[in-house]
Length: 447
Ligand code: ADP
Image 1 (cartoon, rainbow, N blue to C red):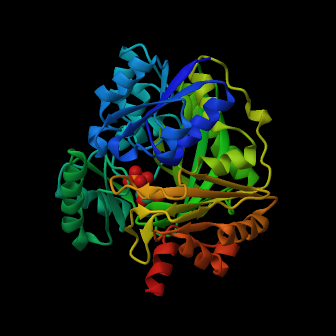
Image 2: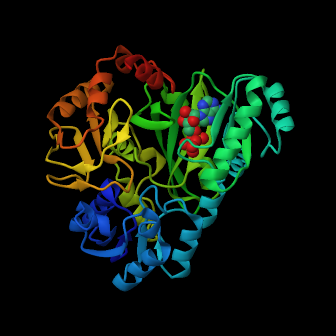
């Protein structure tokens, strides 16, 4: 096992990794920008190193400073959290070149899955069901129109380098195609410096279902069931749960095995998520994320495992501590994302937290780096915490969520707590009967 690891991240996820490491007896090094000198991850880690000025590109994304911090502190491994450098293949290569272990998959796996066309080709070859669409990149408008005709409208044009819901445009009919195609390309070029796009059949009423996988890098892998993340705003998740309210045990076993076998075959190491759209009983692969996800705690809650501990174990060369047969589901878990944002426009609201009280009690977990008097800096994303509840069944989890939201106090900055309190009044949330468009429609109605 490592003696010391560095966490190349901030906020709640940095705390999450520090907590796992401390329970394992592993020392931790926090890195921080000058805007985060007073941040909780800096206070909680055993050591800390300032890696640059506030902008992410000069600090948390600045590879030479992160490597230097690992070297001066003698950290043997780097955990990237999510976001920032977590899916940067070049970073992984540089880390390994310096004789430091990257806690995650290989640079090659990150590269393959980071390009959505290559990812889809790879998954298809491994027997994973995909959304019907173009065979790779679509070079021009004429080719795009041909695909539209072949698969039938509506279709969605997506950037191969895409992420965070950018570079995606829907064409409802042929007359939308020219505009959608060109806009998607321009957005992709601006956001990712790569204007290659591909086209998929646009599914009109799917749910977002993702399978958690975990591999040992040596050909063994398991799945930890699904998460349903269908409640989305602008393709961003806001409310996640496990198990999925509409997935049967047979479906879980079938798609789970396909995913576990696929990642076993490529010797995948560590945590990964295979994302699907699910419609009328069919799963359609959309992308794979080669990192720990924001919503991983709902999976931890129902399986009773610590995914970060497992990541650190496997990276250090130890075997996984569970096999497929050890993994059984216990109850139901829900996570809501608390963002410092003003409703209804979801405008970021940095500023000073004048009072903070975390809810507690049976089945309540609060992953947050907030504290009384903390000043949320304006430079980073607006996620300030995650409230995760666990109950014996979905109804109990929903009741617990309602109770915990009532106990939570976050004063000083506007945040998304009222959104969840309002959602819990909705019959659709209780019946679980919604698809990926439901939240956007609901928000429109409330305006
Ligand atoms: P990103 O990497 O930018 O998040 P994804 O490929 O994961 O992009 O897609 C994000 C979201 O966009 C999905 O959860 C879904 O809401 C929507 N989406 C993507 N592909 C399709 C499709 N073929 N049909 C319908 N919706 C889609």
